[in-house]
Image 1 (cartoon, rainbow, N blue to C red):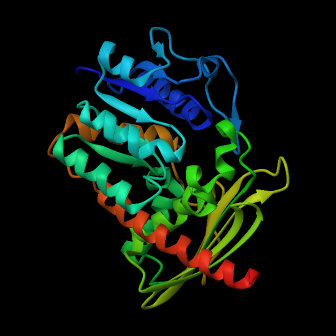
Image 2 (cartoon, rainbow, N blue to C red):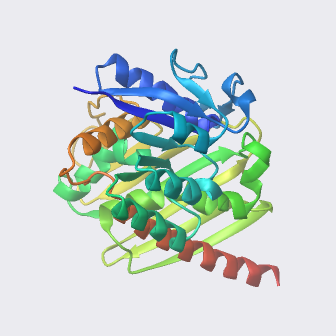
Length: 338
């Protein structure tokens, strides 16, 4: 089978995990090859970078060419897909550019900083008949897939309540400290809170209403609590990226069903039935980044395959909801400060 050739756009912190994923997939025989890496700062090609949950693989594969200009790369490089790992405010610009050049695009989250920009990305994907998927790795993470299966199958009865959390120290690894500039990063709500809001939206659909409370310490480095209301349950989502320096990243959820509770703490999953002893389901440990990239390869190789795992139409709906959450949070924060 012919290999899908990939160009990695941006070689910052998250790109190192994508880089490692391509090596993992190649070793497993997945028909994918990272042929080029582009970053406007050539120092990135040799620089070590660690983010809130560690450092990925900083070694560019032998044979992969490096570029500091995307247009030059498009002109001189033969590749099928662009993997965009740029700061959030550049997602729309470069996704549109690469789609217009006839490339499939996997773009890191968030999809875009506005619903209008996300719509434009969707339009360009359809216009050029290219695949577009956003890097939301919870769609491919076993502990969250277990939750989705439990909700759909009602193995433990109906879901009655769920609390999700995601916490990090301040993301000071971003180029130019762009995370502290909401016009560039979207702030905590758009950049990190989006993971849990999106996966719940994927599992449960659109909420009937919501509420949100935000708090600023460093500008736009907030704590955020969102409540999503559904006809038969409420979902609570907490995020913070203002933890003390070097505080370990943590994320997880507590879900209450009619006949059991399910707790995820990092990659430790425990089911607590109401009438027998707790147990840990046997889950296959996987790399969420590798899984999402492998799925993207399937979509490219099978043009008629429907994207059911992480459809861009769903991500577009998430962008709309996140924008509404951000707007309400701003209004309430302004009222509190008045």
